[in-house]
Amino acid sequence: MLNNRLAADSKRHTEGRANDLFEKCRNFARPAEYKAAGIYPYFEVFGSHEGCEPCEVWMGNRKILMFGSNDYLALTTDARVKDAAAAAARKYGSGCSGSRLLNGTLDLHVEVEARLATLVHKEAAMIYATGFQSNYAALSALTEKGDYLLCDHNIHASLVEGALRSPARTVRFRHNDMSHLERCLDNCGENDKVLIVNEGVFSMEGDMADLVGTVELAKRYGARTYVDEAHGIGVLGRTGAGAAEHQGVLDDVDIVMGTFSKSLASVGGFVASCEPVIDYLRHTARPFVFSASLPAASVAAVGKALDIVQEEPERRTRVLATASRLRRELRGRGFTVLDGETPIVPIVVESDFDLCRLCRGLLAEGIYTNPVIKPAAVYNLLRISCTAAHTDSHVDRLIETIQRVAAKLDIPLTGIAVRHTMTQA
Ligand SMILES: Cc1ncc(COP(=O)(O)O)c(C=O)c1O
Image 1 (spheres, rainbow, N blue to C red):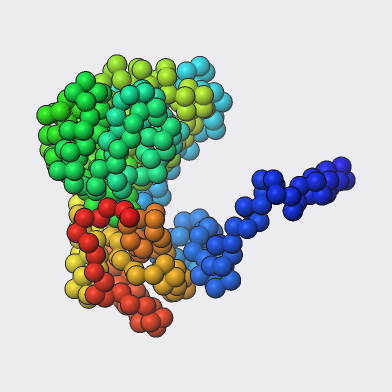
Image 2: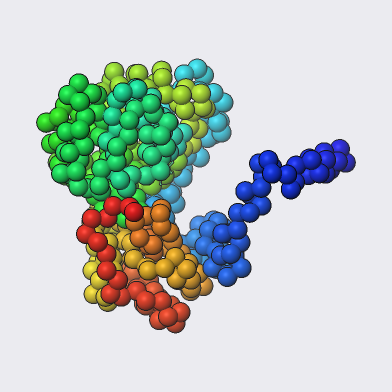
């Protein structure tokens, strides 16, 4: 009763006034337009995986073939990972109820941090509650006024937000353009402190950064390097350490960041570097200090996933081979597929409207793929992500369905020209 009266009062006092903060929300029409057209592609509701193959999920009473998950090694439904998480929840409880700095550090955190540091050849690592938080915290805490952050143009939003929060000057170099990065380095003063920020695998487009070039320039100019390996960990490199290992420069990268929400079958993230950097971040990164620590179940899942990354390298071989075959076959049918050698296979679609129609059409046929609409990526992309659980017949079904649905809906997918450098507009 009281709540209703308060709501009515607040409506009377503010609605229609020029200074109503909520005005923009009432005028926020884009989702409604997509919904009215029957092509709104977000917030689909999925059920469990019970009784499904690892790359399937329930949606109501239909089994959906999932080609939109970043569970690259197909470990989120692995019985060993689930058991480890369940056992940890039973042993430690469902949450830590405190910051790592105070009561929130478990022996599990410390153990998994040491393993992550070893994986990426660094002295120390620290776990954050999310991958987003890892980037946001590290970039903002590590830099000071007058420093430079030189960032690839296509980096993830979490890195962009970290750079925005940082007091350093941020310069974006053209995507994977090492001569432009060199010019940016030239423009920094000799005594300026510089951090070059890159992504091992670009999350939407699926291409790899030129980390050899990045590291070489960093050394020449005395800059430090930061590589986000969210999509590379577990999948690339001899031991699954990511794109830097794949390119033979892991030891030369100063700071490696990774997430647990992709190959490591959990949620959370980490930053690894030399001991002084990690110790500094542990005491100064506000999103780390003033936020509760990751629950034991999530950490234990990472620990088990790390075991499997080490013991079953055939999973990464499998997912890379599947993605490579898919890329080849789609190209063979004239589709424009962005370059890459990762599990992410993006098909370029000219209009966002067609992209949403295509995704709806595929879903009606029981296949989920991700729509990525500009400016979230350089192009409108049907972003397909492969996992180690996809078989050749899943891939055949996907290709056949895309072709059939695109033809039925009259969506052009062939002969779309793309620029060579994929810098965002
Ligand atoms: C490159 C990259 N970095 C960081 C993140 C954030 O990670 P998380 O979703 O685990 O918070 C993502 C998430 O998709 C990502 O793609």
